[in-house]
Image (cartoon, rainbow, N blue to C red):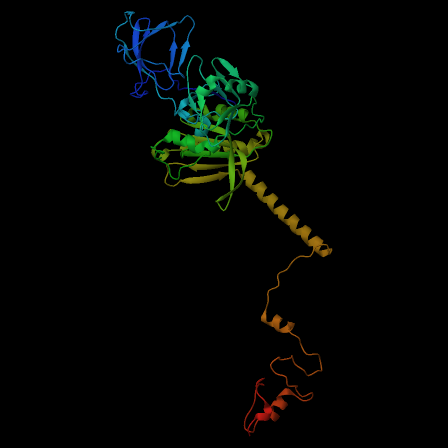
Length: 470
């Protein structure tokens, strides 16, 4: 589902801390009121009435307007500048300053406002967005309010930041050609800066199951802009859950659903809102639902691809040991509905992770029983089928199964050259070149060669019988 995002920060609003001390002030008169306007690097004045700029009283210190400044004149407004010889009679006025807009990042969720909520189906405050989705996603509409001046920092981990369309100066740019033409104008150079480029695609999400936001590569920038130095808050539950696309952990439940091509994310979102989220017993529960990519890792270290899933994040307003219990119950209701109607909804199965404030609960996992049973049966059937096929091919002689042969001492002895039957000859010893007698036993020969009173139990290859002393 495409959302409409409005850029909230404009540089026309007064901000006393916005200018450097070296800025040159000018006296600005809006018909009956005067201001000392300190012009910074790129200020903008939006004028609804005829005004005049008065030069500073010290003639030795001339005032300058910046070359990249901007005046927006409404219909019927006028502008005049003079040296102060004429007094419009509006008094001394006040200092009007402009905020420094150089570091206003595109990836700061606090600078965007979602204006696409469906009031008829969404109870007030019950639907929230993950942190990565609070910044314009790849199929969203971006709106810069007309008759305002803005400057956006586009520093990113990507070279291109895609959106569906951009509206500025009251004109919607929804094609790559129209946006490329605007990027060539001086206004675009003033309004957008950074190492990335905005890209208008003009295309909608092509899947009924929804599309991932696409901001995961800049998740660290989003969290840094949102959390700054404060970090994540301390939660009351045990082992908080970490939803994909969110900066901090949550208490409650995270439902992860598998889906088929015919699954409709918007219809299922409306189903959950109407069937459960609008009930009084779930008055304090908030929900975020979107498509995310669940990464697959090898040994928990190396990423090996990802799988798109539907993620439902449920949090509640309970406190103490009851933290997350209402969200847990809603997650169980959702899983019970999937067990009954999952196939018709295009949801073959799913799982739930729960984190509550109960000391006995901690973090638990609930799986769709139908999915586990069917998965187990299919896995066993597949394994038996593969094993049977291998045995059949082996029996037919079309497949030779490799069997490991471990060396053993007796096998090694059998592999040595054995004497031929009836030869009476053992194996050749390279260090002993004495032929054994052709007839008689080895024991008898040894006894004949041995001196009297001695017995010889083995032949020494380095021993010459002729040298034996008697």
